[in-house]
Image (cartoon, rainbow, N blue to C red; front, side, top):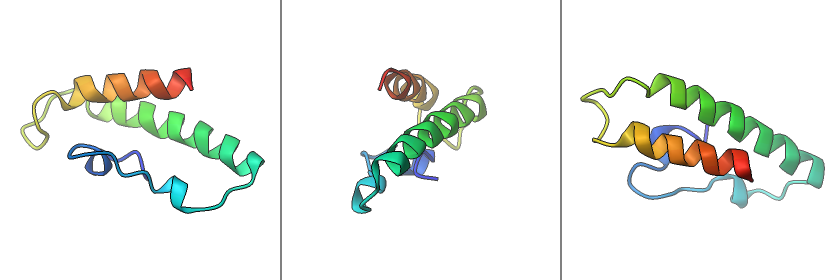
Amino acid sequence: MAEHVSMWVEGEVDIARRFELSPPEERLMRDYRKLHGMTWLFLLSHESPRNPPGTFRRQVERVLATLAA
């Protein structure tokens, strides 16, 4: 669940780099991150007072960057 908003709202935390993954595992992790990023995009699509202003817009940028990778 490294794509949860709490992992990036105050600065990026990249947990995945702390593990040595094989090439197939790295590809699978990229696919999972895309899926989770899009899930959070949907969940954050309605700005909530629980999240800092602009959270949804930042998630859009994150998802687009993840999909381009």
